[in-house]
Image (cartoon, one colour):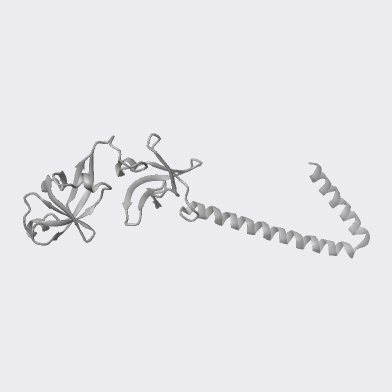
Length: 226
């Protein structure tokens, strides 16, 4: 299986080094000296890493045959691709390669379908799942233990427990409940007002009010028995 592990950035200095945007959690393994990488576009490679070092928080690489700034600039924006065994797992527990997470179904604990992972975004603070919903819209789900509670590679699914507001549907459900509660309170207030009005009419009408009151009592009694 072929995986993109880095993108070449700008040239650094005059001796052929380039900055690299790392796209792997294991740069020591994928981007170490001696690694032979395919490229996109394919015509630019393969490239063999000669040296690597970290400078000001960025990885710098130099490739065999590239000795000056001109040669380094010619490599800008090229993607570096590694051949990876699809059955290979990361060394750390509860870690996954991007290709293992791609296309997983995202569901709630009760099985409600949320969407499908279409991209993994690696940010400095955390990783994000880009999830495509059935209607074509996208969600961003932080890949943190408190939200992504389970990764089941056999069932090809990721179970999430999102906080309120992370998923629009939950916000809509809460909003709908609030509206329903408000409507119920409004209806209750109207009923109380009508009852108070009826009570006032009964007190002022003698015999007619007794007949009306009797009928109402029978109806209420019938409902209670039913």
